[in-house]
Length: 142
Image (cartoon, rainbow, N blue to C red; front, side):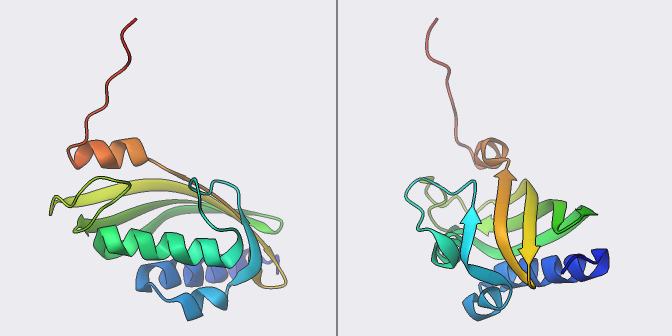
C-alpha cells in the first residue's frame, strides 16, 4: 500500500472503525503488532491496546464522531488533522461525567504496510478538551 488514494481510503476505514467502536473492523485495518508511539500510561501493546483505548473513549464520550479536516500522504504514511466530538457521559481521563458536548482536536500519523496500520502517532489536545469540560490546572508556586 502506498498509493495516496489507497492510504486515504484505509485511513477512512480506521476512523470509521474508531467511530463505530468496532473491534472487528479495526482488526481488518490494524496490524496485531501495531506500535502506538503515544500510548497512554499502562495501555496494552499492539491492537489490543488500541481496542482498549477505543473502548475507553466510547465509555467517556457518547455519540463519538470524527471529522477528518486535512490529510497529507507521503510514501507509506498518512498524516491528518481530525476533530472528534462527543458528549461527556462517563469518566474521561479521570474526569467524571459532565453531560457537556466536547470537541477534541488531534493530529495523527499512521504508517501502513501490506494494507495494515503498523505504526500510529496520535497527538490529541487533551488539555483543551479537559479545560472545556471544566477541569482546572494550576502551575506550582514559583
